[in-house]
Image (cartoon, rainbow, N blue to C red; front, side, top):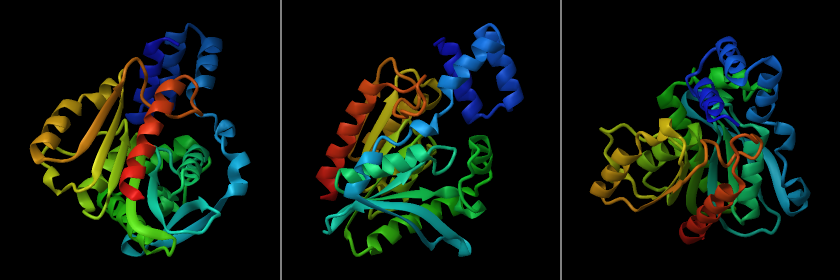
Length: 287
């Protein structure tokens, strides 16, 4: 697919453009409405395909849970763990900018399958939960209060630590919007043991990164100019603060390369390697 189309889609999903303007520009780039429709079919997440671990559910226990959030909000989440009972490391899974979608629930199951107590948090709980319409979810994400949202994720980590199945060690993994939140949780929760950010924007330059106690792992897409613009300064600041981190750039792949429900941007090779590295860090820090 023309890289200009993928870049336009990224602008639409993160700026965002109005859908009307996005579609008008897409038609021009694609060369017509039929070709634009074909491009859109492989750009937008196909959530019906986001269930690669359906056959593994017999080995997992999944439930919808709630816990007290910030300022009286009831937070909602998707909690998954292996059936075999034992104390486990716990991982908060942080969604992209559309909410707790079927794809992120699938990621939560993948974390559980690897042997962890996994919690997919619904940041849109403050609005009643993630809507089925992804454009609506993206709009609601933009209406979240940043401090309240951060506090709600901090309560999620406390909730996981309080679960009887938890061994007390916690990590997080986030994608896109969630990658940025993973960086923020590392900055604001000194008890966090590991934080993994997939193509997430970096904390403000004024942040005191010496507060980070978690081991960081940062995954970046080589073609993701928007997010990568903040990478050099963040890397230098982390080194200056003495933070333990690993940083990987996957050449020739796009933002959201891990999202297998979005065929135009998904890259199986990069996704597999990044996931292996992620699980290796969790094994080192959460077991």
